[in-house]
Amino acid sequence: MLKLNIQDETSRLKAVVLGTAKSSGDQPKLEDAYDPKSKLHIKNGTYPRNEDMVKEMEAVAEIFKKYDIDVYRPEMIEDYNQIFSRDIGFVIEDKFVKANILPDRDQEIEAINYVLEKIDQDKIIELPEHCHIEGGDVMPHGDYIFVGTYRGKDYSDYITARTNPVAVKALQDEFPNKKVKSFNLRKDNEDPKNNALHLDCCFQPIGKDKAIIHRNGFLEEEEYQWLVDYFSAENVFEITKDEMYDMTSNVFSIAPDVVISDAHFTRLNDWLRSHDITVEEVNYREIAKQEGLLRCSTLPLIRN
Image 1 (tube, helix red, strand yellow):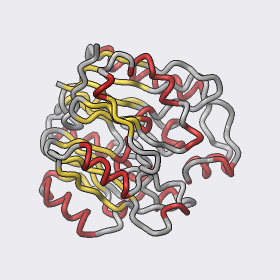
Image 2: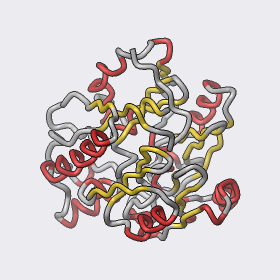
Image 3: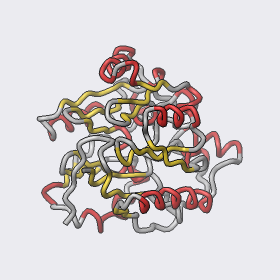
Image 4: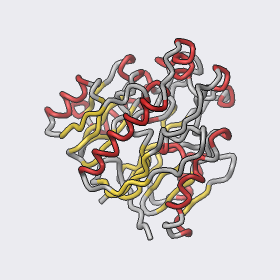
């Protein structure tokens, strides 16, 4: 049996689900793309190839092996995008919450059924169908659960709005001892530089007391400021609009002092090293073309 344990984003990782790109299918039609960045690369003829994304993901698998982490991979579904395992579920404390994701992606969870069977079935939570939620919007942080959402009345107009306020309320009901703090995120179906697809596209805790953040990802200035005050300004690494577009906040922590980051993020990586954080660099430029990066492709199960 797997005894789940996730209290935060940075404690020492022991077990994780890493997505797969082995059979992601053909390039989607423009009208079928789920996010503005994928649309841009479809238009430009630069949409990523499976073989390139496989190579990028295997480099992450090798780092996990180096740190003696148990790695689970989804069972392959032919011609189906299974890269972003973070979206399909998430762990808080010792419970696995199945996400209610876009209907076109609902087969993805089936590919990790062999993992879910190792978990106490009483510890698996399924939220009501009207509670839209994806793991990229959910961040356990000690006494808090940080959640990205979109509160606009035009929620249904945005394919980039993935977690609704009803789901935020359901999460609070499921974890009454936690303080669920939601953040209203900026959404745009067409402009990838003006769209925070998930909370981890504009914010992420790092180390023991630090965070990466992009102000314009938040619609409410006071919510952005709350985070800056919570971590304190000297512990916050502010990223630019271009850096958010590059997915600079979407790195992945193996431990408080070890982070997997894209080699392209030179400014961030230098800052991390200046704070005595080891940076394991990989190239994730092709996967980034689908508006996801390292945190998006990983689903932590156990942290010590």
